[in-house]
Length: 237
Image (cartoon, rainbow, N blue to C red; front, side):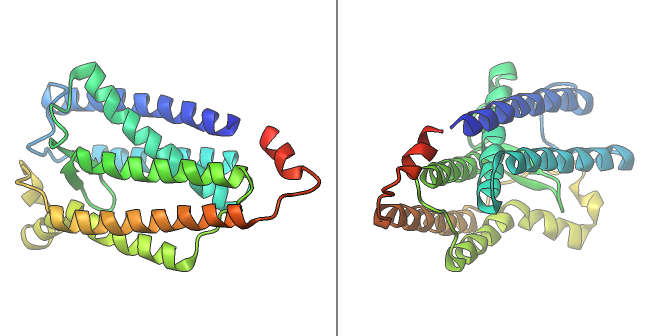
């Protein structure tokens, strides 16, 4: 729990830092901190810097996950948890400092790799809540004695769910890039959101997470108690 609290504190600080930085970026591009659209294409050098910043952010979150975990699965779970908390705090920071977004359906630029991701604010929040809650519960189950292992069927089900979710964020952007070139994104304003593939993918991801939680819980319940008290000592430690 101390490691989880430390990762939480780190992720909260990173989320605040990201929110404050985005406010500066919006001020630079639009002249106010609450405007996102129409899109403004950055100069190549600034665009490369922004992509590099996003890569650095993911590396930082992955690094803290690696340091917090003791083995591969636990390190991955800590990374996912840190990413989710960072994302949630990012939006809380924007809302508390500048009152943006005005609603959960407000469109936002979510990511830039490999292309621009666009979707309503509620979409990444839903994903962050799913990933953060699942990873936290799996970490807790691992602490109290269940060796958390992801069965291949759950991994592939989760990956399969990610595909329509990614399409909902990037499908229109790929269409513009293919048929109109990158310049077609200049002054782009999103019109609606492809909810159907998002919900299909989200349900698949949620089902995979539920299976992983259920299987880990039943595995923990089926384990015989340790007569030496090692499990209890591990929890206390």
